[in-house]
Image (cartoon, rainbow over all chains, first blue to last red; front, side, top):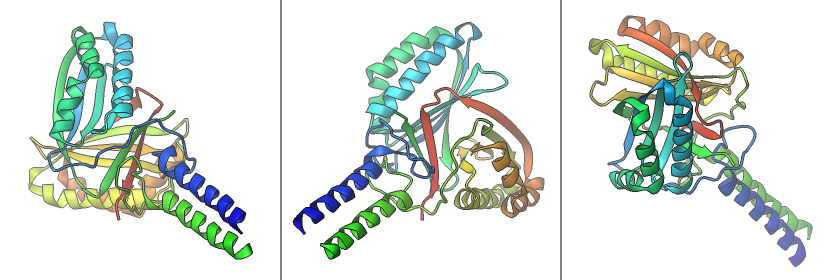
Length: 151
Length: 151
């Protein structure tokens, strides 16, 4: 009986850990592993933002590498960076939009002081033709978005 | 031994179901219950879109209700609607942006044929000053976004 309990407990624990640690995409039919850190809950002074960046076409490929790197490191390592989801217009890939969500003002301050953000910021200054930071309000507070990096 | 296995299996099953069905926000420190259906995986012909809507200020409050309703019902009931995350500019709340992600062209066709989308579309036609559908490409295919409705 002890052995059977032990085995079953192991199975239960394994399933539990698989669910809790394995995947931010559990709404999907196929769970996937991620390497994103545990996130802080959204605070009343949190930020939801659409950053709109126009990149100089001469530097687009190089800019993309910086943007992917800063997004990945921020999501992987910063508990207060809840989303950093960057997309490029299909018609004009120089128009980039990033859905950025910070759990609090403190989390945002910590983000812009981080070495990976500073590397991105200083490294891409000459590549960016314009930058617009549009702070926004979700229409439905019950509509939740989760952002993770797949392993 | 049979009884202990039975109880332990129940515990394992309960934990598993809790993880799979309970929460799309497992990256957060506090799991939350959601009522979003199981989603299809993204297909090669899937769509990621930023819909940009300028609402007539006279109808803003009424438009918001329609937009929240269609977003909620689509996420709750349509396996192929992966995100429908609507935000309003803080400076000009008549400027709405919706991050819409459909698993496939088929999923998109099914969405626009649904009664809840048709109710939204027909009900808000006179409220919308302009509508721009910007199809986009995520910069990093490993950057995953999950959208759920909290219970």
